[in-house]
Figure 1 (spheres, rainbow, N blue to C red):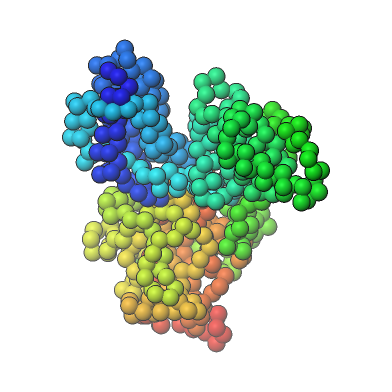
Figure 2: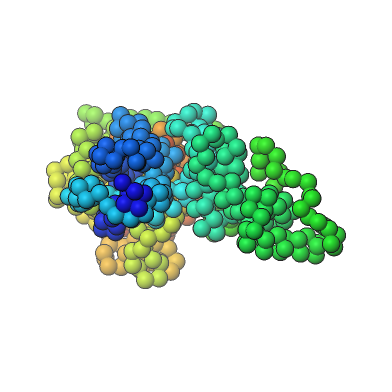
Length: 544
């Protein structure tokens, strides 16, 4: 079979599968990505069948198949654990997007009819990630890198916080991360990952990307970061490999003019003879690098809290058995931990069973949609890049377990659950997070809950339905508090003072999940019907 025929069958596969079964936003929930491993396996199996028929003339495709099969075998031992690692999750998306397209490039036209027919028959069962998923997975890795101050080289070697979790990235993998950053206008991370790609390229025996491809992105992004001399030197290196590279030739003239205007070089000097910046290994620490502008003023404080808990606050906290004056808990008191004093953040342990958690997850997963936020002006729900997760809503009457956990929240808090919203269930995706926000409506958002007719959100109850190996804390940047997920526990706090005014100290965020899969569910409880359950004292913040 000729290369043209092989290209044809892959073109048809990609057309049949990706145009009809590409699922966007899969990166926003890890549980949604678990099906991708089955997709990868099905591709391996069908590709293997085809290669067996044309084995002598399809050696290159066999290499792809073996690589995919190796990845699958690593993942199938524990799919959830495999995908809980953000590097593995990114690589899985990458293999099923840009890497899979590379297979097509080695072919030209025609198809293996039996192979395509087999895949077509399975097209309703297979799920393919989209280019949006690839970009989302890449951005998630950058977010984790910044939040937890992960070294680029260590991350590329599969090392997270001193522990090896995954296989190493290739030069081509690092190049793809850099390319995604470049496409997002993020030249800071482009430099970091293209620099890493360059170092890995020099060490690779089987090259996964070309040196000129790395240098082109690296040189321009280095320039955009304000390192003009280094950008010129990188461009000169590129032109040594590709002397007639048109963009490089144009950029070289521009860089020389900028340096001339800055007085860095003299007129009519041959810059090709400048000292070469490309040392081995290429060290981005020698460059001036600046992160992209962030709209969030408290970003630094937020990320610091994600990394550690204030030790001086821990000494003031305590645990105890409580009944909350509810006879139901006289025989079996609640395990309560004070997570913070002002605002009062309380954690109740062992308040939802594994069986109830399993029910909630099972019911929620088929309904998952990308989590939304409420537009403060229109009141409409919409997507936001600062909230990466998928959610579903479960009504109290849908299942006995939902009814029981809802009643339990009312018993523990003493609040009327008749004016509480449905149970929201959330699974966070690769690097899943939620930037600092208030749960209650404030300022120009006071009409956000008008349609409910229950007033503002007086309190938040947050169930933690999974253990998270690293990351995923609920943090309160204004006061420096952090609550860490523990399966079966729940956090509770009042969003409003007793007089109904919002408590600005309750501004909180969900830290990016570094490793693990984070499941939570929450009940937002509103003001109405709580007048005599939480009466106001003589002062605005005084409890009765």
